[in-house]
Length: 240
Image (cartoon, rainbow, N blue to C red; front, side, top):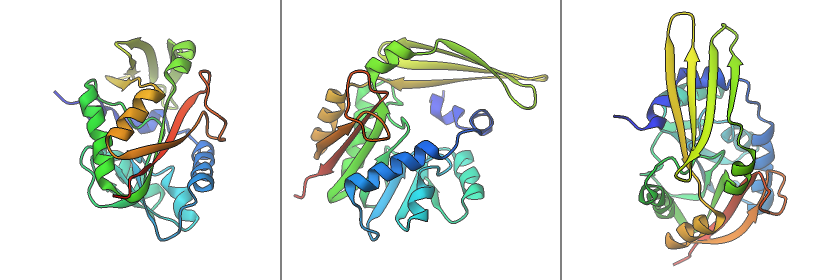
């Protein structure tokens, strides 16, 4: 059996989310630059970069950024959209190379049911960061999700395919079932994201030598609260 993320991020994913624009990506990139003040010679890594939606504004501003993603379809699509970007296949559990800033954006964490595997991702990040380097994670706010979860919705794609999405929380995991129902065939997928509080994320960071520094509640840089839509934490690796 394969993990859900090995199946889901394929051409159907691209069909369903083709409408996503770059507004929130540009907003968060602006917040990262304003907060961390990176220099143009620092190496930046975007984990689970998808098609490179966040990499592109960094690149356009003159920063050296690499994006890695486990999905060959998303990497290939990104290279077609943004031919100048450095997008590569890669696994966040085993990051190759060293970087000055590592980013985990748009809920690219918590993909495993086992806490130890998710902690292993943070450990991989800690190993790949240069001393004094920054880590930035943009994650769900569990309290907000529990209050605002949309149980189900239906979408009709341009070719007439019906997509039904159902969402629920089970064992502190947000689960989304996705059914594509076309004229000829049906396809089923699932998303699973483990919910972690800001306190738990901070503990995982500290355990991997990354000292939490600050937290925001949205892409504009608002202070975090229990009603914030996002949990955005940034921390710095020890110098030793």
